[in-house]
Length: 129
Image (tube, rainbow, N blue to C red; front, side, top):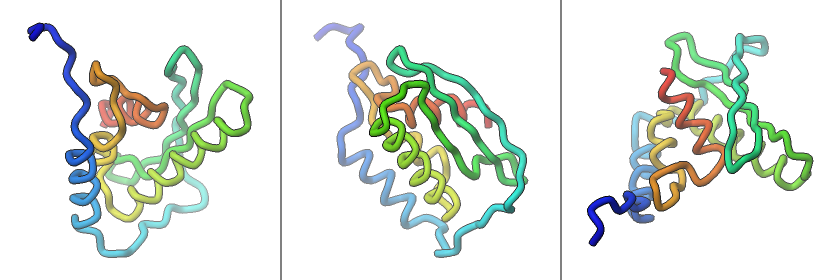
């Protein structure tokens, strides 16, 4: 075995366990609805040689409250998939799932790097918290 071998992606059981911990956490079944007008920040990042934008709003305590992703690429399917991933993550957060749990649950490549745009965005944003 090569000692410099890249870390493997956590087994699916680990990722599922993280998602279950999220669902069994302090979720009260109450969604923390955000005000219609709120401050947001937009960051630009690259994933797989393509440009993306993440627009993030935060709760009063500074934690991520919602995220919107958009792609510089023009494909409608890709744009919709990226948008849907962000919406699902935002809803989970608003129901009490910590952003760190989501970050740990996203797919990684064989080198431990994000394998999807949403994972790359969360890696950047969770480090900022």
